Length: 308
Image 1 (cartoon, rainbow, N blue to C red):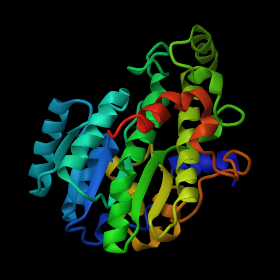
Image 2 (tube, helix red, strand yellow; image 1 turned 180 degrees about the vertical axis):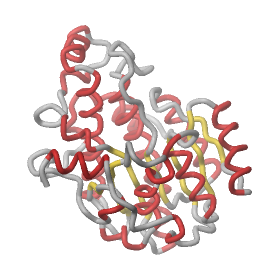
Image 3 (cartoon, rainbow, N blue to C red; image 1 turned 90 degrees about the horizontal axis):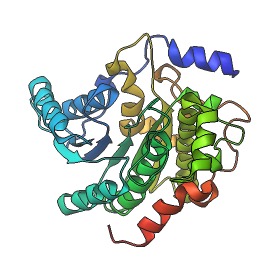
Image 4 (cartoon, rainbow, N blue to C red; image 1 turned 90 degrees about the vertical axis):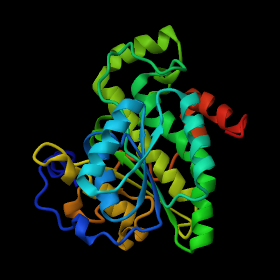
């Protein structure tokens, strides 16, 4: 599939082949959705609640989370759980993981949906990283890593693999050569600031989405599909509302057919099972966290140096 046709397919999909009605009953299953208070994340939570799942809606703003909780209750008659999570602050990420472990012993599916797009170039995370990479990638990397024991426990006790669904984008096609400019990831570095200014906001966003696919591929490589199913996907855009955009996440997180798709980067729900990747743009050999260099340093040390 060429770059142009891939972009057109992602932005102007035809009618979906799968709907929320096709999802199985999710009673007793715990889902965690980042960025769940608005947009596609909100629609994902709404659909999961309609299928009787227990849903943790993660948001950096508790007030907005409470507003979303009340709106979801009006729409579905069900209550979600609100979890405070600021992906741009790794201390907040660790605290959110601690809170989840106090409340739950198992997680059926983690949906990494949250993120930022196009903030000012000078915007940084609490730890000094580029805001887009820090939020979209590092925050989700640490959160996922800390929740892996709960996900693995689910697969052991239920006999069904737990799922990690990560929302990427066709924008990965416009990432720098090699996917990530590692020099742009150095926190609180004047040289990194200059590199980011040269790259621009769009390219910085693209490299964050490329890294999410590579990270998901690495999860799929490391874990047996009988334990963990890791899928990345594109969020649909432009001609469809957010309820349509949530369908790919819902399919990947609930449908039995998605059990065969670990390590895939999926295109829109119209093309179930088709890979989003364009030859040469995603590494054939998945990258490990250490391959990302300095951008992962704080995350790795934080994870190793604490029990949450």
